[in-house]
Length: 220
Image (cartoon, rainbow, N blue to C red):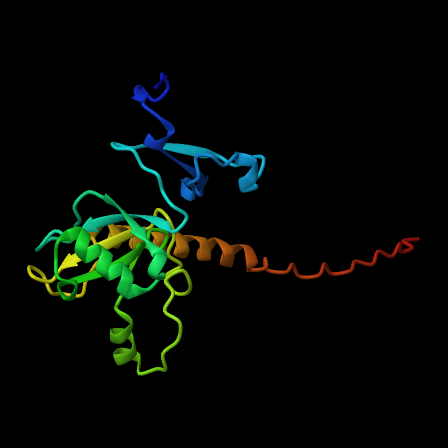
Protein backbone atom coordinates (compact mmCIF):
# COMPACT_ATOMS: atom_id res chain seq x y z
CA UNK A 1 0.00 0.00 0.00
CA UNK A 2 1.37 3.42 -0.91
CA UNK A 3 0.45 6.90 0.21
CA UNK A 4 0.33 9.71 -2.33
CA UNK A 5 0.77 13.08 -0.54
CA UNK A 6 0.04 15.01 -3.74
CA UNK A 7 -3.27 13.24 -4.29
CA UNK A 8 -4.15 13.09 -0.60
CA UNK A 9 -5.33 9.49 -0.39
CA UNK A 10 -4.04 5.97 0.11
CA UNK A 11 -3.42 3.83 -2.98
CA UNK A 12 -3.72 0.13 -2.08
CA UNK A 13 -2.22 -0.98 -5.42
CA UNK A 14 -1.79 0.19 -9.03
CA UNK A 15 -5.06 -1.65 -9.80
CA UNK A 16 -6.85 1.24 -8.08
CA UNK A 17 -5.52 3.74 -10.64
CA UNK A 18 -6.04 4.42 -14.32
CA UNK A 19 -3.29 6.14 -16.26
CA UNK A 20 -4.18 8.35 -19.24
CA UNK A 21 -2.18 10.44 -21.62
CA UNK A 22 -3.30 14.07 -21.78
CA UNK A 23 -4.47 15.38 -25.17
CA UNK A 24 -5.90 18.88 -25.63
CA UNK A 25 -6.31 19.17 -21.84
CA UNK A 26 -8.45 16.01 -21.78
CA UNK A 27 -7.71 12.33 -21.03
CA UNK A 28 -6.63 10.75 -24.29
CA UNK A 29 -5.11 7.29 -24.54
CA UNK A 30 -5.67 4.80 -21.71
CA UNK A 31 -2.48 3.02 -20.61
CA UNK A 32 -4.15 -0.20 -19.61
CA UNK A 33 -1.44 -2.79 -18.94
CA UNK A 34 0.06 -2.39 -15.45
CA UNK A 35 3.00 -4.67 -16.22
CA UNK A 36 3.96 -2.86 -19.41
CA UNK A 37 6.73 -0.29 -19.23
CA UNK A 38 6.08 3.23 -20.49
CA UNK A 39 8.78 2.94 -23.15
CA UNK A 40 6.76 0.11 -24.75
CA UNK A 41 3.91 2.57 -25.42
CA UNK A 42 6.25 4.68 -27.58
CA UNK A 43 5.18 7.91 -25.94
CA UNK A 44 6.75 11.19 -26.94
CA UNK A 45 9.21 13.00 -24.68
CA UNK A 46 6.73 15.71 -23.74
CA UNK A 47 3.74 13.41 -23.22
CA UNK A 48 1.74 14.32 -20.11
CA UNK A 49 0.15 11.56 -18.02
CA UNK A 50 -2.72 11.94 -15.54
CA UNK A 51 -3.82 9.41 -12.91
CA UNK A 52 -7.47 8.65 -12.17
CA UNK A 53 -8.19 7.14 -8.72
CA UNK A 54 -10.74 4.30 -8.61
CA UNK A 55 -13.13 3.19 -5.90
CA UNK A 56 -12.44 -0.48 -6.55
CA UNK A 57 -9.72 -2.63 -8.05
CA UNK A 58 -9.69 -2.87 -11.84
CA UNK A 59 -7.76 -5.10 -14.21
CA UNK A 60 -8.69 -4.25 -17.78
CA UNK A 61 -8.18 -6.78 -20.52
CA UNK A 62 -6.97 -5.87 -24.02
CA UNK A 63 -10.54 -5.96 -25.38
CA UNK A 64 -12.15 -3.92 -22.58
CA UNK A 65 -13.22 -0.36 -23.35
CA UNK A 66 -13.92 2.22 -20.63
CA UNK A 67 -16.89 4.47 -21.43
CA UNK A 68 -18.42 7.30 -19.40
CA UNK A 69 -22.18 6.78 -19.37
CA UNK A 70 -24.72 9.46 -18.45
CA UNK A 71 -28.44 8.84 -17.97
CA UNK A 72 -30.73 11.53 -19.36
CA UNK A 73 -32.91 13.17 -16.71
CA UNK A 74 -36.61 12.90 -17.73
CA UNK A 75 -38.17 16.20 -18.66
CA UNK A 76 -34.87 18.06 -18.43
CA UNK A 77 -32.16 18.91 -20.90
CA UNK A 78 -29.54 17.55 -18.54
CA UNK A 79 -27.87 14.31 -17.45
CA UNK A 80 -27.07 12.53 -14.21
CA UNK A 81 -23.37 12.33 -13.20
CA UNK A 82 -21.10 10.00 -15.19
CA UNK A 83 -20.90 6.32 -14.33
CA UNK A 84 -18.11 4.21 -15.83
CA UNK A 85 -19.03 1.24 -17.99
CA UNK A 86 -16.45 -1.37 -19.00
CA UNK A 87 -17.50 -2.84 -22.34
CA UNK A 88 -16.04 -6.15 -23.44
CA UNK A 89 -15.61 -5.89 -27.22
CA UNK A 90 -14.73 -9.57 -27.69
CA UNK A 91 -17.90 -9.96 -29.79
CA UNK A 92 -17.03 -6.96 -31.91
CA UNK A 93 -17.28 -3.17 -31.88
CA UNK A 94 -20.89 -3.25 -33.07
CA UNK A 95 -23.77 -0.94 -32.21
CA UNK A 96 -25.88 -3.95 -31.28
CA UNK A 97 -23.24 -5.25 -28.85
CA UNK A 98 -22.85 -1.85 -27.19
CA UNK A 99 -26.62 -1.35 -26.90
CA UNK A 100 -26.96 -4.78 -25.28
CA UNK A 101 -24.21 -3.96 -22.78
CA UNK A 102 -25.71 -0.56 -21.91
CA UNK A 103 -29.21 -2.03 -21.53
CA UNK A 104 -27.88 -4.73 -19.18
CA UNK A 105 -25.89 -2.11 -17.26
CA UNK A 106 -29.04 0.02 -16.78
CA UNK A 107 -31.38 -2.97 -16.20
CA UNK A 108 -33.58 -1.89 -19.10
CA UNK A 109 -34.89 -3.71 -22.20
CA UNK A 110 -32.61 -3.02 -25.14
CA UNK A 111 -35.54 -1.80 -27.24
CA UNK A 112 -36.35 0.77 -24.54
CA UNK A 113 -33.10 2.70 -24.67
CA UNK A 114 -31.46 5.12 -27.06
CA UNK A 115 -27.78 5.95 -26.82
CA UNK A 116 -25.54 8.60 -28.36
CA UNK A 117 -21.85 9.48 -28.35
CA UNK A 118 -20.90 12.98 -27.23
CA UNK A 119 -18.42 15.10 -29.19
CA UNK A 120 -17.38 17.79 -26.65
CA UNK A 121 -15.36 19.79 -29.18
CA UNK A 122 -18.55 20.26 -31.25
CA UNK A 123 -21.11 20.20 -28.41
CA UNK A 124 -22.98 17.53 -30.39
CA UNK A 125 -24.50 14.10 -29.70
CA UNK A 126 -24.50 11.42 -32.41
CA UNK A 127 -27.15 8.69 -31.87
CA UNK A 128 -25.92 5.10 -32.05
CA UNK A 129 -28.70 3.06 -33.62
CA UNK A 130 -28.69 -0.69 -34.09
CA UNK A 131 -27.46 -1.69 -37.54
CA UNK A 132 -30.92 -2.84 -38.62
CA UNK A 133 -32.31 0.60 -37.76
CA UNK A 134 -29.56 2.27 -39.77
CA UNK A 135 -30.29 0.08 -42.80
CA UNK A 136 -33.99 0.84 -42.60
CA UNK A 137 -33.38 4.57 -42.39
CA UNK A 138 -30.65 4.82 -45.01
CA UNK A 139 -31.77 1.98 -47.29
CA UNK A 140 -28.18 1.09 -48.09
CA UNK A 141 -26.38 -2.20 -48.47
CA UNK A 142 -25.00 -3.70 -45.31
CA UNK A 143 -21.33 -3.04 -44.64
CA UNK A 144 -19.10 -3.66 -41.66
CA UNK A 145 -20.61 -2.33 -38.44
CA UNK A 146 -17.60 -1.05 -36.49
CA UNK A 147 -17.93 1.81 -34.01
CA UNK A 148 -14.17 2.38 -34.12
CA UNK A 149 -14.56 3.83 -37.60
CA UNK A 150 -16.47 6.78 -39.03
CA UNK A 151 -18.58 8.51 -37.94
CA UNK A 152 -18.23 7.46 -34.28
CA UNK A 153 -14.48 6.77 -33.79
CA UNK A 154 -15.35 5.27 -30.40
CA UNK A 155 -12.50 4.90 -27.90
CA UNK A 156 -11.68 4.74 -24.21
CA UNK A 157 -13.01 7.68 -22.21
CA UNK A 158 -15.82 8.65 -24.61
CA UNK A 159 -19.11 9.83 -23.11
CA UNK A 160 -22.29 7.88 -23.95
CA UNK A 161 -25.66 9.49 -23.26
CA UNK A 162 -28.49 7.11 -22.38
CA UNK A 163 -32.18 7.83 -22.80
CA UNK A 164 -34.84 5.70 -21.08
CA UNK A 165 -37.70 5.45 -23.58
CA UNK A 166 -40.04 4.24 -20.84
CA UNK A 167 -40.11 7.78 -19.44
CA UNK A 168 -38.97 9.93 -22.38
CA UNK A 169 -39.29 9.29 -26.10
CA UNK A 170 -38.06 12.44 -27.84
CA UNK A 171 -34.96 12.34 -30.05
CA UNK A 172 -33.10 15.29 -28.53
CA UNK A 173 -29.87 14.48 -26.64
CA UNK A 174 -28.57 18.05 -26.37
CA UNK A 175 -28.31 20.12 -23.19
CA UNK A 176 -28.55 23.79 -22.31
CA UNK A 177 -24.77 23.77 -21.91
CA UNK A 178 -24.44 22.52 -25.50
CA UNK A 179 -26.55 25.46 -26.73
CA UNK A 180 -24.34 27.92 -24.88
CA UNK A 181 -21.19 26.22 -26.15
CA UNK A 182 -22.34 26.40 -29.77
CA UNK A 183 -23.28 30.07 -29.42
CA UNK A 184 -19.86 30.81 -27.97
CA UNK A 185 -18.16 28.92 -30.80
CA UNK A 186 -20.21 30.79 -33.40
CA UNK A 187 -19.36 34.15 -31.83
CA UNK A 188 -15.66 33.30 -31.89
CA UNK A 189 -15.96 32.13 -35.50
CA UNK A 190 -17.62 35.41 -36.56
CA UNK A 191 -15.02 37.42 -34.67
CA UNK A 192 -12.16 35.51 -36.29
CA UNK A 193 -13.77 35.93 -39.72
CA UNK A 194 -14.07 39.69 -39.22
CA UNK A 195 -10.43 39.97 -38.14
CA UNK A 196 -9.32 37.89 -41.11
CA UNK A 197 -11.39 40.01 -43.51
CA UNK A 198 -9.90 43.19 -42.07
CA UNK A 199 -6.40 41.82 -42.50
CA UNK A 200 -7.06 40.85 -46.10
CA UNK A 201 -8.67 44.17 -47.12
CA UNK A 202 -5.93 46.20 -48.81
CA UNK A 203 -5.47 49.77 -47.77
CA UNK A 204 -6.64 52.39 -50.25
CA UNK A 205 -3.79 53.12 -52.66
CA UNK A 206 -2.37 56.60 -52.50
CA UNK A 207 -2.74 58.75 -55.57
CA UNK A 208 0.54 59.32 -57.37
CA UNK A 209 2.17 62.62 -56.54
CA UNK A 210 2.03 65.22 -59.28
CA UNK A 211 5.41 66.08 -60.76
CA UNK A 212 6.63 69.61 -60.22
CA UNK A 213 8.96 71.36 -62.65
CA UNK A 214 10.85 74.44 -61.54
CA UNK A 215 12.27 76.82 -64.10
CA UNK A 216 14.55 79.69 -63.17
CA UNK A 217 13.51 82.67 -65.21
CA UNK A 218 15.47 85.79 -66.06
CA UNK A 219 14.13 89.01 -64.54
CA UNK A 220 16.59 91.38 -66.11
